[in-house]
Image 1: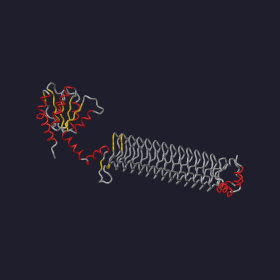
Image 2: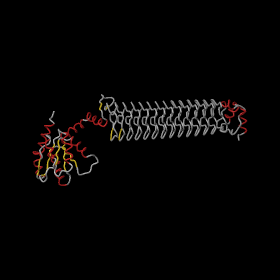
Image 3: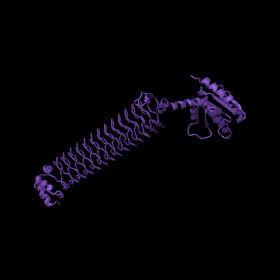
Image 4: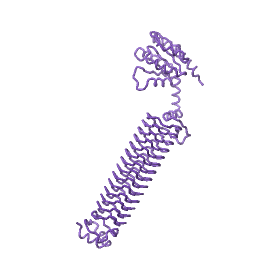
Length: 509
């Protein structure tokens, strides 16, 4: 029950009540279950200072409370549907589970207010102050929150579906698991906000500032993020499929395993972004900035990369084939533009252009590398090792390929790659096993690559070897008696003839 003295004081009118409140600041008014009809509450309450009163039992639906000071008042569970609270001071007010459906709260001060589970559906909070207000699990469906000031607001698990948050200022807001589907957040400031597991599907975030926000596992399916700022935003495992991210800034954002299928990223800034294992199937990155981005095991099936800037990009084991890789820019923005047409080739081409050591290394490999093919069981490997050591003393770079060990890649592909890097090949076909197959893939297709075959006199050439001797770049088969005898005549019988052939096939310019 209400305190009779407090109720009598209230009935004296606003001036007497406010003076009494001023003179008795330490007294907490008790108006529980009071009948306030005699003081015309609905038209005059805005004139009263009812700080710390308990008004929760009253039905204040459609009440006119414009400009009232209700700071600290207990209104938990209060019925305030369609009430006019425009400009009202509700600082630290307890409104838990209150019904404020379609209430007018324009420019109201709700800072530090308790609004957990309150019903604010379709309420108008345009320009309201909600700093550190607590709205966990509140219903704000289709509410107007235009240009609110709400730093550190708590909106965990709140329902904001269809809400209008245009130009809202919500720095460091906690929106964990909030429902924001189809909400309008265009131009909103959400710097540093927590949006983990939030549902932002079909939301309008165009021009919004989401820098440093936590959006891991959030749902942004079909959202509009055009020109949004997401620098340093966490988007690991986020769903951005079918999202419009044209000209958005994702620089420095971790986006590992994010779903970016069919995403529009035209002109987007993805510099220094980690897209490892992200799914970019059919995404459009035309003219996007991917400078220094990381693409490890990224799915790029059908991705459009035309005119993208990829200076400093790191590409490893991408999945699928991009739809277009034309005119990839491999130089920094402040340098003359150089373009290539293949993503995985781009970083290699740039190294060639800008690192003389790389160019010298390639020149060295192609002029001095010698591929040695043969069997690697003990007797045969002794001969191959001796060949390798002898070639080293003559300033060559010997490359041995071991056919005896299992390989994770296709053997033929590996041998072909090594062969095409070499100046010539020495193939010991003694007791041949895999070598015939490898030579059949090398000799017919590399007319500028000399091949010198050798064999121990204890063995006969395999049946099909004579087929290769008709190729002009294959030297006559050389037979040796012992390893010692081979090394003694290696220069005269093998190296000099094969070098001569190499000079004939690839004369110096």
